[in-house]
Image (cartoon, rainbow, N blue to C red; front, top):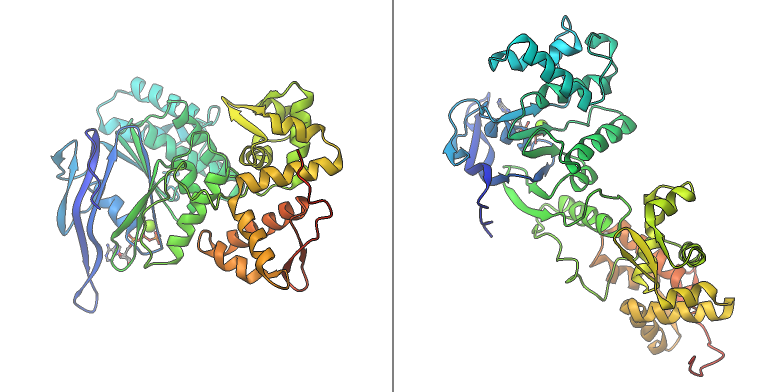
Length: 440
Ligand SMILES: Nc1ncnc2c1ncn2[C@@H]1O[C@H](COP(=O)(O)OP(=O)(O)OP(=O)(O)O)[C@@H](O)[C@H]1O
Ligand SMILES: [Mg+2]
């Protein structure tokens, strides 16, 4: 399953091994036959458990330590000594306390032969990119942890490296600070303003990997060997509530918690198992509310604008938008939600009719629902236990996601009057439909 190296590979590790001598004698193999590459224009995340050798691999790629076997190629040339095309951002920064923010950011530039003025100009620019304008004269002790980390980024940015390596750059920060800084970094990348040609980011955090990376490379432990990679086929900017996002996070979580599982990545969106589309976590009321608003506004609405007018984030609307799309009520085109005929009908329908329309769309677009209904019909007592369905869902989702899928399925199925659910007994049961005549 060797990946074909692309033409523009900037940096590559080929069959890299690394062993360290153990204090009691003998040696520990930390990396084994690791082959990875990094191409121009891509962000790769390296994900692995603690001790799997992520930082060691980064140090080898940066030329700070030598591999015990295999080799590193930079622009096709074997690497000897520190890699001049690489800059690093670490978990936390040892800034020089006696230097100002500006002087700390200039540090690496003198070694490159820039004069004072040039260095000052580069540092000022890099500091403004990380939102530190106005703090140039401050000393590290006067800064918060988040701001110090920004100086760390500026220090790497001034080098305009081919590859920017980040070793858990946000993990020492509190959640909100991390989220802000991560957002700003990916924003720079998305706007094409990032001062490096490619990024290699090491993280423990699966969501972070899926937010940032084009590919997530999974490193196993003991010894660290590449288990496989997962392509992140999501447009940018990314939204954590997008079902595909949730699905990718879920998939990676499952492989991370099953060290023996093969890492093959998820099938292409189109080829995904149509019988088990991931149900967005949206209530029926959310879908109908959205459709009513879009319908009232002429049947087409710009998503960011719609969110803003409702004082929401686009992320808040996505579950309802995705559910409407999955059910064939609407489609999303160039950032607009466009209502489809079934959606217009649903938005205008009376209560009775809306249950019917929902049922038709649900059975048509979520084949698993028909399976459930059929199973209920065939059981002589007309009941199915939750466990039975969870067992099936478990094959397609992680345990926690299977539970959420079940909850959504129950909510939608009840609205469609396909079945009832007894939460105490944890059983679905068939409901008598009074009017078997055709709807049309
Ligand atoms: N210089 C060294 N000498 C001896 N052993 C080392 C050295 N550097 C790393 N190791 C060992 O190599 C293994 C991998 O370490 P490494 O720091 O690369 O892991 P990691 O994946 O970055 O972990 P973490 O997620 O905790 O940062 C560990 O068992 C560590 O003890
Ligand atoms: Mg590490």
